[in-house]
Length: 174
Image (cartoon, rainbow, N blue to C red; front, side, top):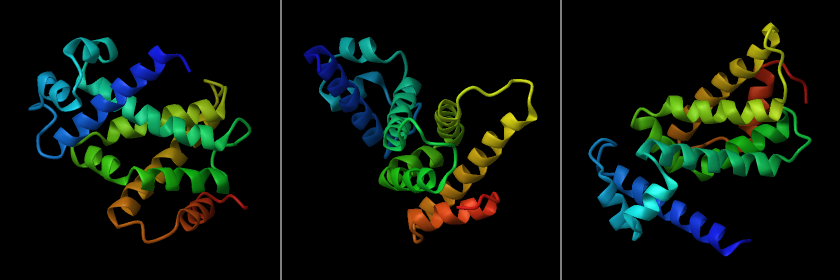
């Protein structure tokens, strides 16, 4: 990988980690760019080279999570299969603290938008005129809601159990 790309990725991750650490004790609005850059040990120039706003940091973080999920699923995956669910619930559990923090701070819509974008990518072209396109959003909304409550409840069920249960709920046979 190009050294500039590696350094850019390192800076973005440092900024993201710093921002999430600050969000633990301060509101989104209270956090200044200077605090983020100081905590991340990067310059303001590095911050603004990578992000135009604090919201972009959250969008970047969520895109990274769902990119992990998409990469693990591979090219040939279909929306909501048993394997899809297993990966989805496992990746969400791995990022539990951050997802719940964003939910608690009122960014559920941002999480769901990132999830929808990933699912649209997986589903491929959907006819704009067909009512069938809404199946994706029904399933995404329901699985997202279940995932949030599963995370809040301590993830007592396995990712496999959650995936199987969701398949049963939406009427898909394994």
